Length: 71
Image (cartoon, rainbow, N blue to C red; front, side, top):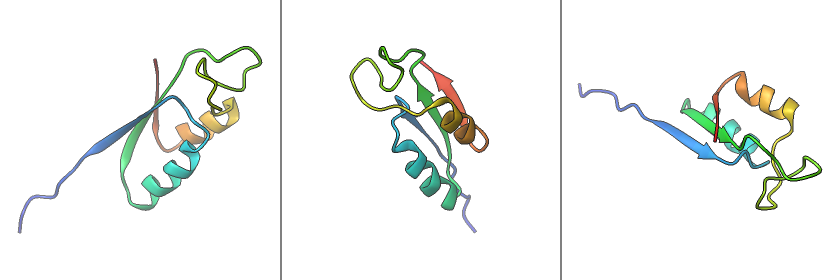
C-alpha cells in the first residue's frame, strides 16, 4: 500500500466567500490557513481594495476549525 498524500492549503484576504470555502474544505478533511488583512477600509466592511471581508464573529467561527493568520 502506498503512502497517504497530505497537503495543506492557504487562502488570503478574508473574503466573505471564505465561509463557503471552509465548508468545502471541512467536508473533504483538508487543513487550511486563512490569512486575513490586519486592517480594513474605513467603515470596517471591506479591505483596502474594496472587497467585502469577514466580520469578527465570522472569523472566530472560522478559527474554531482552521488556522487564522494575518498579513
